Image (tube, rainbow, N blue to C red):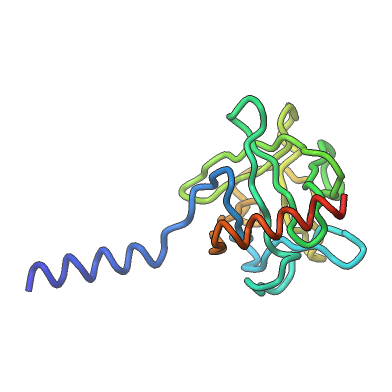
Length: 168
């Protein structure tokens, strides 16, 4: 009986575990406050959208940046990289080259901002209209993210990444 309860407890805990971002993996980023996912529109605008784990516009490939303490995030639909902004309420955008981002763990979730930003207003946030903007991090759940790993075989991931290299 005790062993069964322990197994059940481990199972329940595993249901609520959040992935720690790792280079070379693909993630769907879910906003803690809104419950939606980070995605892009057909015009490459970065927004919060209703989650669809199979939608490439909501899948982000994480890569280490040279200092190995920061990462870049590449959208699998566009091939472009996520770029932050240091001004409050300014839109996050997509660009053609790698951008260094910092992931700060906060109680199993992550606050994300562009490396080198020194004020407290550069964090990735979903505003009331669903736009991805820079915002102050002050414990607001709309500025916290969960990384949910998307399963890819290495062969399929290589195929997707090679097709992206042909886009850019």
